[in-house]
Image (cartoon, rainbow, N blue to C red; front, side, top):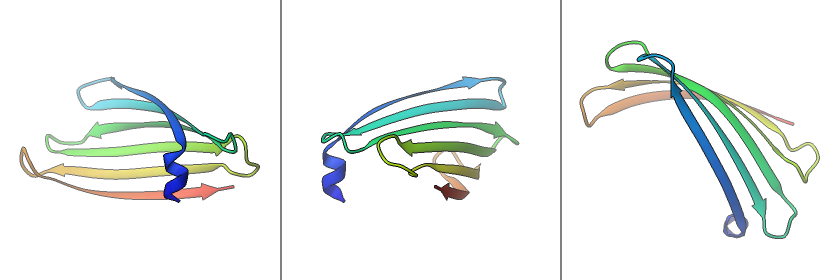
Length: 102
């Protein structure tokens, strides 16, 4: 498996927009191509952070991806989590994720 990742080029970009002091929306795009042209992976992600208190943040995200060179290779992922800041240097968090693959 490590051979696969040494022969792949990735293009990645993303951004975030603070809608309000409490809400930030985020998006990203990833395009990965294997050097022998057998795989081309594309992933799009959308999500956001919402501050529910001075130290607590709810995080959600949805990602969909596919290998454009391989039939039935798509996946849809949903992630939800919560972060609680205990101090300036310490944060605890929990996440739930689910994936549905073609």
